[in-house]
Image (cartoon, rainbow, N blue to C red; front, side, top):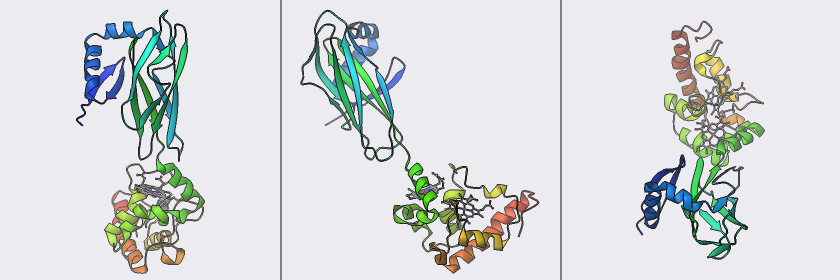
Amino acid sequence: MMTTLVQLRACGNKVRLASYSWMILILAALYCPAALQATAQPLVWDAISKEYAAKLGETNIYFTFTATNLSSEEVLIRAVRGSCGCTIPKLPALPWRIGPGASGQMEVLVDIRGKRGNLSKVVSVDSSAGLSLLAVNVKIPENRELNLQLAKADRQAVFKNECATCHVYPTFGKTGEALYTAACGICHESDHRASMVPDFKALLKPTDANYWETWVRKGKEGSLMPAFARSEGGPLDDAQIKSLVEYLTKHVSKELLDLGNPFAGP
Ligand code: HEC
Ligand code: HEC
């Protein structure tokens, strides 16, 4: 089935709607917003936009919207639709009748499985009082927070289970600069480097081969810096560590010297 995506700005909120049949309603709303507002008034919602910050592991998010009929006539809700298959409105059987002065509740389920970032969905309610657009916004937490919790409990956790996908497998068979990028750069050179991960360009201490080798092999207990040597339960063999120390001494330490850092240098 063909779907047309329409973007519009309604009351300052950016909403995204799917399906061709809506387009007519929306175009009508765009060309005569005053008419839409006027006819939509009898049915008043407790909010037209709701937000929720999901916790790690949550998959089903429920929102409740309350509609009140302020008019002296019955309002008939004929159709309710979510802007995607993951946004499911749950309400009494249609047509849903709300008597004069009465209120009714509608639940909206948002399935956030496999979704990332900030999710915004729209539910359209088509009633005898007009069209209402309700927005639901879910802030989905980054796995990063969970990763951090696991690493705080065990700094070697980065080398285990699914963490290895990003923190170990890319190091296989690599040496020198490529190994540095895969094994170390992932944390130390990240654009989103966490505050507890030091910037090598700001080290105020001598950084000779021994310094690098000790840090690579043993890391630091009680911190998030893991021990990379096989003998410590890490993923790198002696040849890889040797190549890494060479690279770090020749390049990172030298860069520090070139930057005029008085402490640096092999
Ligand atoms: C999809 C790839 C990926 C997976 C899987 C992954 N990480 Fe990471 N990790 C990264 C990246 C990239 C960074 C650098 C920071 C950033 O860009 O988010 C990072 C940074 C870190 C940091 C440094 C602190 C920080 O937040 O920057 C720690 C500690 C960490 N990861 C631990 C873990 C643990 C423990 C796991 C498994 C439970 C894990 N990571 C799984 C990609 C991954
Ligand atoms: C999971 C993220 C992560 C990875 C991967 C990682 N580091 Fe670190 N590293 C840290 C953190 C966090 C610290 C800060 C430790 C502390 O609290 O002192 C650190 C500290 C260091 C320090 C000490 C800096 C100082 O202040 O003297 C060195 C050197 C270092 N790392 C080198 C490396 C090298 C080389 C690699 C690659 C083999 C690497 N790190 C991989 C997170 C990481």
